[in-house]
Amino acid sequence: MTTQRYISDELTHFVGRGLRRQPGAEEHQFQLLVDILRGGLLGTGGDAQVQRQVGELFSHNEYYKAGMVCFSDIPVPDLAIHMGKFSRFGLAFSKSFLIDRGANPVFYVVRNSQAKLAHGQSQERAAYFDQWHEKIWDYFQEAEKAHAAGGGETTREIRRLLGFLVYHFFNFVKFYDEGLPAEHPENYYMEREWRIFGNLDFQLDDVRRVIFPERFARRFRDELPEYYGAIIFS
Image (cartoon, rainbow, N blue to C red; front, side, top):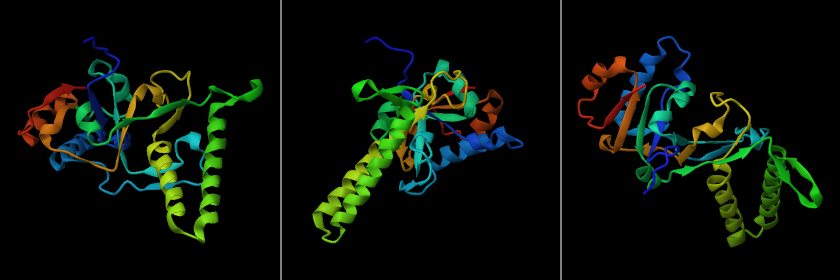
């Protein structure tokens, strides 16, 4: 079987992105990684309910807020560019392990691409998606109002259909600008992102690989002597 280096059989999650600019950032990131491995939990601990940010544009990637865990499908030799955007601390699981727990890749949309319309017309794809996303919400809200008085199965079906779109399509759409440098933090296409709704519970034996700077090697062994998976130094 031919292998392709631009995908991996592991998916990697980097921890502590929000700590990067704090004093002693790497110390905090290292401790966060250790705490995650000890606790066997990735995520906030809350549920995966979706919150709408009405007033945001769908194409700005901020319209939906939901509890989820994100991973990157990037082979080990190519992780450096991603670590520069997130952090030098991470953990990886086999792709098959995460797929069994609901992981799925996002659907990337190029904001500045031209969507081809009828009669030879075209529209920037971001604006086109924003327009139809709003119309879809308007349609479902009007349909629910129309059936609300009667209630029953029709109203439940409307809500189920909208729930399917929100949870399994809209939340897996990610817009980005083509033409940004590979290292640009908003060149999301380079992340090759996968997502899991809610939290990921795991055992230490499920972790295929951990990533951290070499200066933490001794401390890591002291903190987690029971870890026997792979280690790479970032």
